[in-house]
Image (cartoon, rainbow, N blue to C red; front, side, top):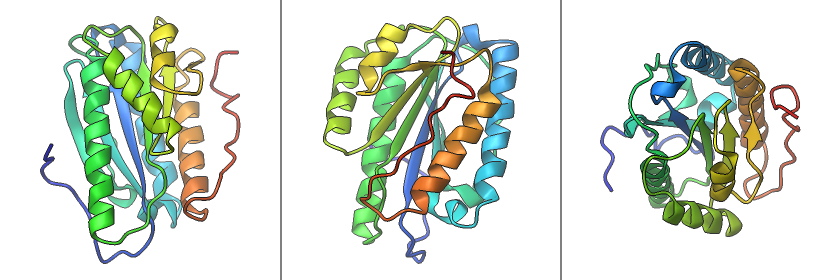
Length: 216
């Protein structure tokens, strides 16, 4: 799979931390949900860009589903501009997660070709529903890749999400977002990425439990 317009600076010797946001923007996200998701993305941009290390080492891509699209190819956090998403379409989660796998694989190849060290890539899935397309094969592939430490997968269910399905994409349990606490969730995500990007490549990093935005 060839993704056009990849922003990459091979002269930057810093290790890279790739993060794909796989975002459900299907029709059921209309109203307050999509508004709060957009606000959370703006917070995510600000939090990453306020950290001098993370802004150079973290790379962000956005895959949306409803329908599936590569909304934002990988770009350094320093250049990331939070989009304004519009809810529409069906919940094509399987295709979106396959696209996330594909672009992560391509990005890792790019790092390797340029002798750039990199952290384990993150795939961060957010959905308020259940897939309307085939998903079981890609879910199994993701779990296997995570087990082999090729990537890390996090699944977040918004009210109405099928947690049993979300649990199939990762070896860690899916969590439920407390209301529409996207702002708090993205503060946690940016802090976690800052923590990872300031660590040694390959080292184990303990993340702060996401208690402020998870429904317990």
